[in-house]
Length: 227
Image (cartoon, rainbow, N blue to C red; front, side, top):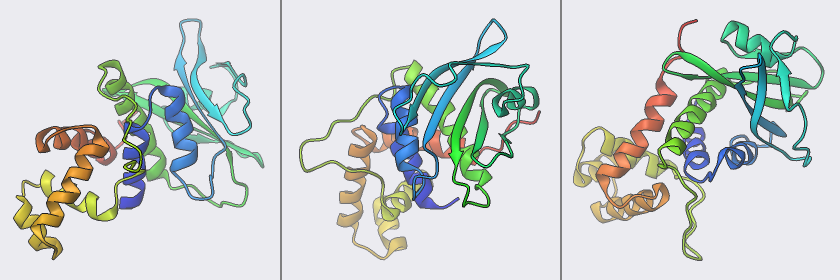
């Protein structure tokens, strides 16, 4: 999993106003060539089914599969039973990824269709997406993540490679001068880029930026819970 993908995950989280927009941003911003045309999020319902809580489709179909029976052969049902990601073997493939919190499965992320021309999907990226959704849900519950609105001409779509390097340097406890030396750039440039990172994350200082960045990066680095 490369830095560009991490940058795009940060964009999906910080620029999503609700779960539906999270799904929309995942479709359009995570993979080049728009590998998936539909992303849907399901929660476990008391009636023994998976109930669609949010979703987005490039076709505009928002009513598809409102409920999925856990007793069915749908990949999402198999994910509930196994606690692991599941891919069907049809020509137009459907992929389901478990959403975990504190070691418990509380939802399923469904992506479809998988481009038949693609031989495989990076499992690390998919599990990172699952972790990112769990982080987003936690943040949304506490009001932490809201839509970001920038003044005209100042919109930043995603963190650059250099900004990610600076964020990582701050996370390692380095001062701006040391980060500048490590990256062979001026300290003033590092400070300028740090200000852009703060604006992107919707925070006003280094401490808040580190807190927001660490939550995502820790979630991406965490291995899937044992089943």
